[in-house]
Length: 548
Image (cartoon, rainbow, N blue to C red; front, side, top):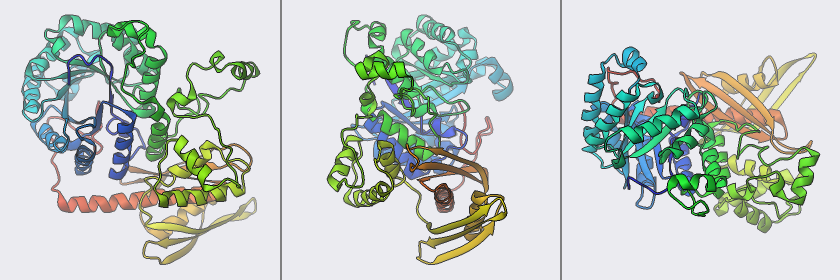
């Protein structure tokens, strides 16, 4: 990759740092589905995971490298600590990609050196030189990160970065690991690196930042002005703690304010050439897919992709928008893939109209999927005068990348009230077509359903979250339920929507249980095929590979 890309490179770490969000958990098929959508979105680099973390993460990265890492596809990157064991495993995982990258890191702040690494500065310099060179022996594209760069001594940071470049790093990443920086701080740090690091022109400067103070996007935009040309971000801004810099916010900020940013990239102020390669019409679809598969619900007032991002309640605003949308909107909804509704869909609508609407929304289903979703659409339309885009997207999302149906819901019935003991009766069909019916009591109808399902499946777990929200308009609209279960310290999420909240909750719980069972079975198969990997004693890493 050229040292001066002439534009801003988008490095997507949704599948690595994004999956570190508390409660987010993706199986291999879901990771591939997101990676495929990221290709349609047009990201330059996909950080597919942390291969050393577990055999499952290794297999997921290797699978994405093999299926997504084509000649026309993005760079496929794996993260590794600065140790030979990590780097060797990472190299093997990304090897199937046409353009593989190893992203290795070590901390550079005094607080990390003293308490985590327990090493002197000179030792770190030597590790950087040796491990970057070792990574370069496997691939031509090596990225090096100075973990906790924003709390590092700048002079030491300059020395570390120079060492990494001379050892073969093609990208140097400056992470705000703990979300400590302000835009002014971050801009000065990047400017200082550009000014004081010899050979900096031989590498691309990248930035990675967390949103602990709500400043990640602002920090990145300031970094661009001072020479950063790669942004490490996630869809919907998900990630460790308060999350990462949000991909959609960064891309749309650069698009809407292009005349402001053009001069910082050496362009004419009025240049219409995009600053990134992102296909913005895929943003909304990508956002919905990531939200549905990770279980991370998008807040209504989230910039760009939130439900209220293009909604107007104030009468003054409504009047202005009706006269000219530019009075109160700086982004055309169609730019991110939210087309204006041109077809009113209801119970009298036919398959052709439904298919056209799906195409307008960016969905391309095979005949079997179309038949199934059209049937569900007609069932919804029978009880709802007008079916909205949100209704259609819910139908689609609930039939894309759902877990294997080990158990299928056949019947749920509850009795409850101020003088009744909450009782649930549930019938499920196993994948061998046998049916099981059980009943249980609980503290409420949802608890009774949860206890009944656990009686049926016999898989120990703990209910950690139950949330419900209205996602479609009207008294007969749908409610969406999200349920999260914990099994052996791992969270499994399930989602469903229905006009009857009890039915939605039952199906959501069953989806989570099916995901749990499928994951456990897959893990058992992998354990038979792979010998367990021993962790490097020089640093510790938890079961999910969480780090900066």
